[in-house]
Amino acid sequence: MRVLVVLPTYNEAENIALLIPELLALPLDVCVVDDASPDGTGQLADEWAAREPRVRVVHRAGKLGLGTAYVAGFHFALDHDYDAALTMDADFSHHPRYIPAMLEAAGRADLVIGSRYVPGGDVLYPLHRRFLSKTANAVARAALGLRPHDCTAGFRLYRAPVLRTVPIDSIFSNGYSFLIEMLNLVQGFGFSIAEVPIVFEDRVRGHSKISSAEIGRAAYTVSRLTYRRLRDRLIGPLEARRSPRKP
Ligand SMILES: Nc1nc2c(ncn2[C@@H]2O[C@H](COP(=O)(O)OP(=O)(O)OP(=O)(O)O)[C@@H](O)[C@H]2O)c(=O)[nH]1
Ligand SMILES: [Mg+2]
Image (cartoon, rainbow, N blue to C red; front, top):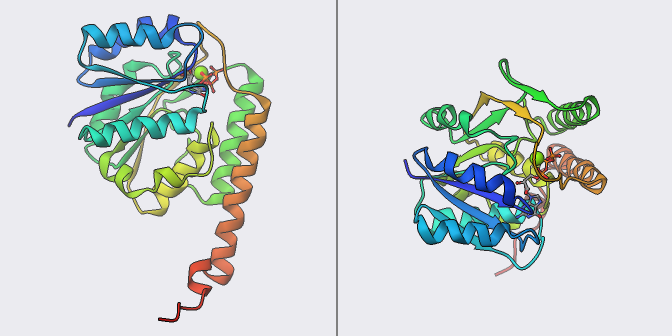
C-alpha cells in the first residue's frame, strides 16, 4: 500500500525539522501543505523536497484553513495514485509512533482513526481542553449518530476509495469542523471505520492555531448537520420531495 502523509502546516518550522526524518523512517511519503507560513516552514519543506523525492510540498497563498489544506493533500494523493492518505498534526500531538498500528488497521477498514477515546487512548491536555474535546465528541456522537468514539481527531488514514467517493470539494466546513463533516460523510457512505488508541500530547514547540471562533464554528457545523439529519428522517431527503423535471 502506497501511503501519503498529508501534513498541514502553519508556522511549524521547528516541528517539521524533527518530524519529517521520523516519518521518512516509515514506509510512506510525505506531502507538506503549507499556507505561506511566516516562520519559513514552506522553505524548509522545499529544502527537504530538493534532497528527498519522498517529500513533496503544496504551497498555498495564505492561511486558508485546516479543512481545505486536507482537501489539497487528498487531491495530491489521488492525482499521484496513492492508496491512502494519512492526515496528522505537525506538532507531535499526533506522534509517528502510532502510524504502524494505523497502517496495520488499514488492512481491515476504509478509515482508521488515531483515537483518544478508546481503551488505551488518552489526552495529556490541561483540564479545560480535555473538557472541551470530550464535550464536542459527546455532542457530535449524540446529535449525528456518529459511531466512532473520537469524532474530532485529525489523525486519520483514509483509503483512496473513500477520497474518490466522498464529495471532498463540496464539504462546507473549513478548519476543525471539517473533521466532523468528513466523518459524517464517510459513515453515511457506509465505509468501515476502525479506531486505534493513541495518547495525544500537548504541543511542546510552536503555537496553537485553534481559536474560540473555531469552537463556535464547530457548534454551528453540528447544528447544521443535525438539522439536515432530522429533516431527512422526518420528511425525506429534499431531493426526493422535488417533483421530477418535465422533459
Ligand atoms: N496549512 C494549514 N495548516 C494549518 C492551518 N491551521 C492549523 N494548521 C495546522 O494544523 C495542525 C493542527 O493545528 P494546531 O494549532 O496544532 O491545533 P490543535 O492541535 O487543535 O491545537 P493545539 O493542541 O493547541 O496545538 C498543525 O499542524 C497546524 O500547523 C491552516 O490554516 N493551514
Ligand atoms: Mg496541535
